[in-house]
Image (cartoon, rainbow, N blue to C red; front, top):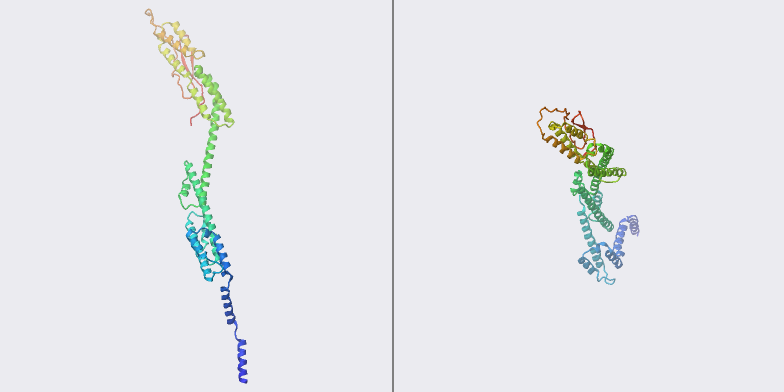
Length: 413
């Protein structure tokens, strides 16, 4: 009895002092296994909820009709009475399979959208998303991020396309500018939105600089034109004093006065900042001044003076010679002496030169000393020459003088 009691006591002590961890661990494992098989996630209600959520998702909406039909056939006969763990697994696995396929499809699609012209930020956003996922939570987050990224890339590409068109238009419309660098950006398919925008800014700056130069030059030309108009107006009285004007026809004088009034009006308009072709107005005025038909009168007068000087010895009637000389000397100062009168004087001089005497001259005729001009009157371009005729001796003497008539003309650009 003692031996049995001692043995029993030893076994009792052994049990009391033995570790209990293995038993507790096994217990917990068994309890965990039981939780999986009896979890509420595997109930009929849970699979119905999962199906409803799936059908509301964008994934389901974007499925092709065949995949939708296969899935609908799978869940078509499901009800609470025939629900089993096997049906749960089939449906849940099908949903997971479709989700995985759509996830990979979306990931692949976006991967093809990652091009060299995409911004670094969007590229980095894509690199942060894994091609697969380890949990439902990670799937939901990544799938959502992929869709957001897709929208951002599409918006980015749309803006890039619009800005590239703006850049192209800017280059085509400003061919007079040096836009070689900006064209390189346009021609480079990997140019991103930032580089395209910088190229657009560069063109705008070059256009602004060019326009500023144009405005500056236009201002200088305007000031120069204003000075030319002012000088022409101031000099108009000198033009009217010139012999060319005095000997011009009434028609030419009237046209010139009309142009002069337009010139004065243009000066007022110019000061008021109005935009007109003022250069055309002063050009017209100068052209009329240069083309006054009084120049023809001066040419004809010079020719007649030369003819008289060279042929006066042939005029035998000294009284007639003196009279013709005096009349020729008075032409310049006589404002009423016009082209018709000059023609009449020319005819009388030539008639006198060619007149045949009725008897032979026994005595050598006296020759009148005549001062000749060393140079005839020369018409200078865009300036007037005033011509004077003066008596030199008691008898016919003609001197051609060049006076200082001055005309301001607009310099041609």
